[in-house]
Length: 150
Image 1: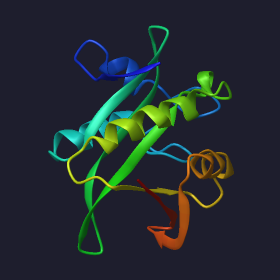
Image 2: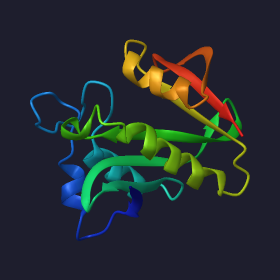
Image 3: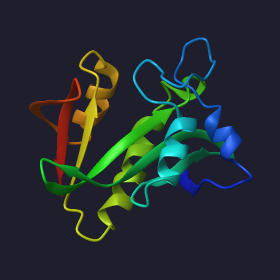
Image 4: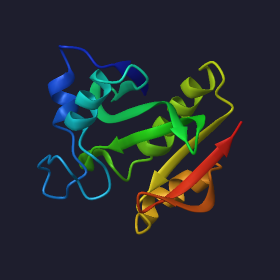
């Protein structure tokens, strides 16, 4: 598994990934904003880094991360992370998360990573807590805030 840049050759594949059970991508999916919207958002902000998750030559996931403002302080956030519905349940999420965190650790000034999840997304909560994220008992836009310090 590896993280790869999103290019003009693969952006359509990335945009068509989905977490929807009917396998049809939508702008707002159940627990995550679509990859297409996220890629567009990243083009209008120079802070977001976008990567595709590749497994055995196939693109199976997406991540968007970088510095952001939290209560007047610059912190590093894993803003979006998903594994396509067809590739879920195979351990790829845990493996990809480790790769993403390893890349984030290399960012200048990154000594912790924040993320937020929908409160009812127990699957994501389990994966993040296994990786060492701690719930801060705070909500941001209706989502639970988590932190992983390095």
